[in-house]
Every structure is written in structure tokens, then in C-alpha cells.
Length: 191
Ligand SMILES: [Zn+2]
Image (tube, rainbow, N blue to C red):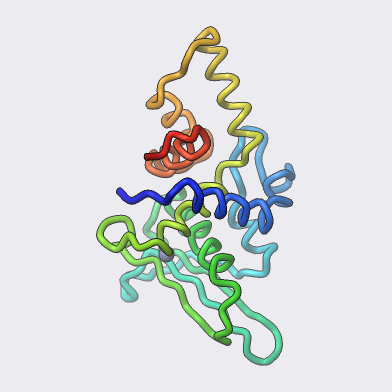
């Protein structure tokens, strides 16, 4: 499993704060128990979001941007066979590509989430989009609250990493892989 350096992870964290900070601090987009309404964020950013049968396209999801004719139109589609958790991640990941590649001058582009993304094709752009997704789905203040309550449950002692991963994964509806990446960067323990 690939990792980004801590410096790069921090840059991506800044990008998320810059682009999504407003949303992640508002109750309208984050439920009381911590779940980020990533579809609503994407919609309010001007994306149409669809859940479609993408089996023919052989992708988990895709993002399309068209800047022709003066106005930018954009959409994100996710393959409808995926779980809610996967769909949330795909939407956040594609938003990551959008903001990471925003400076591009092309008037039209497509980013596709292929089935190989998590395995072999772990180039830095994919990892960067994954980190972006993690930061987008785990708001800082909710993470801190969760860590506080875990600590209390352990009578102020150290909470082991596996327990944290499980709690983060359940609370924010992200995979344990994403939970682990997030916790390691937050705690400065990334290898
Ligand atoms: Zn991607």
C-alpha cells in the first residue's frame, strides 16, 4: 500500500482546507455524529452527481469537466453497484482530482476511477486524490471529538491504533485503509 510523504500529505490537507473548509465546518454538510454529506458538497460546488450503471465503461466512477462555451459544466458519476461507503469515497476522490488539477488549461477533461486504482496503479496523483478524499470525509473537529471520547473510554490512557481505525471507519463511514492513512498523518507516525 502506497503512502505519500508527510510534506505532501500536509499540502493536500491545506488544499482541502482552502477548497472545502467552509463546508466541513457547517452543520448543513456534516451531521451531528460526523458524517460528511459529500454529495451535497459536490452539488453545491456545481457538480451534477449521478449513480449509474458503469459496468460497460469498466470504471468505478468518473468526473467530467467541460469549460467550453464560457461556462464550466461538470459532473461526477459513480457505478451504482458500489456500497454507500465506496460511493462516498469515489465522489471525494474525484473532487480531489478536480482541485488537484484545477490549473490545467484543457477545456475538457475526464478522470476515471479504474478498478486497478487501489492495487497496481498507485501513482502519486491517485494517492494524492485518495488523501484528498480522506481529509474531505473526516472533519478535524469531529475527529478530535472522537479521539477525546475514545480516550475517556480508556480512562485517559493510550488508545491503540486498531481501535482508533475502527472508530474512525465507523464514525465517518470510510474504509479502514483511509482511516489508517488519516490517523497516521495526523499523529505524524507515517513511515
Ligand atoms: Zn483517481
